[in-house]
Amino acid sequence: MSTRVLICDDSKIARKQLARILPTDWDVDVEFAEDGQEALDILSSSVFDLLFLDLNMPIKDGYETLEALQSFEQAPAVIVVSGDVQPKAIQRVKDMGAIAFHKKPATAEDLRSLLISLGLFTVVAKANVVVAEQSTAAEQFTLNECLQEVSNIAMGRAASVLAEMLNVFIKLPVPTVNILEVGELQMALDYSVKGDSCSAVSQGFVGSGIAFETLLIFSDSSFPDMAKLLNVREDIDSVVEVELLMDVSSVLVGPFIDALGKQLNIDFSQSHPVLLAQHARVSDLVNAKKAKWKRTLAVEIVYEVENYQISCDLMLLFTEDSVSVLENLLSYLVEED
Image 1 (cartoon, one colour):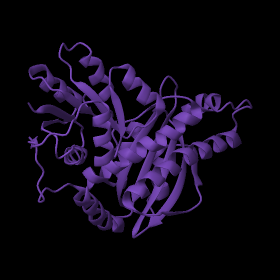
Image 2 (tube, helix red, strand yellow; image 1 turned 60 degrees about the vertical axis):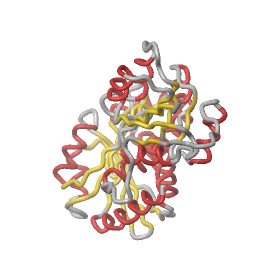
Image 3 (cartoon, helix red, strand yellow; image 1 turned 180 degrees about the vertical axis):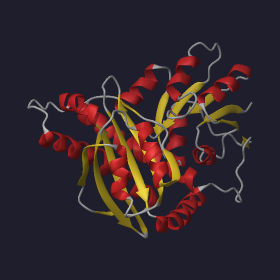
Image 4 (cartoon, rainbow, N blue to C red; image 1 turned 30 degrees about the vertical axis):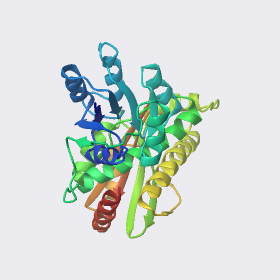
């Protein structure tokens, strides 16, 4: 009898990649869900043996899905496959019933070894692999979909470093990717940045025809709790705030760019980080960039620290000339998966 497998991930690319690396000699029937709620709806009406579950998803995330599965009489075994590699995240999902955690991107060899070690897969003489959402060579993924998935993986690496430094749990969103006009960028930042004022650090990167700038935007209301977590005992003046900004920028931006570059096979050169603004309005940040560009490909990630009033917005702003290079590069990477 075939093993019934459900792959739950909001990224079409991640679903395709995971389905393609399942053991080819495994007698398995694969179906898909785009978020936790859809997975629960499927599992409530049909029995599955194994669920591969992402964590950062809209509508219902992986944690909420695991919690809901605890009330199921015939819940499948759950393997979490996520870019969020914080130790506390891994421990949390195991405490909630997941039998294993595997970081993104998974490889066929590693996944095969994991399935064998868990007793979920044994080699059969003849396999009948049935995939309900079989991808074809002609299938196309948009630039936004590709960039969102590689950003999701890089985001998890950066959060793990910050979480270890602060001994906290970082709440991770689904990265947003959009082509934005200057005015649209201000609206996006107004929505995500908490408080009336913010401070920001800017840094430039370039490599293999791709150029972009990172903006780490820090809500000013976050400074007291950040100082507390970093054991800063002196009064929080403008000098201390800049030091905190630079520390957080180094911890978040460095690992993010490193993980992004490894996925794209690019070694990015970088400029020195620069204090862009301090105690400014979002409109001031946007105005400071109007002279350089009118339109940008933007990746936005809002990091929040659980149980603390700390929020920072990491944005990658790609030049218009970089878009076609990214499209070619990311489409090639998807074909190679």
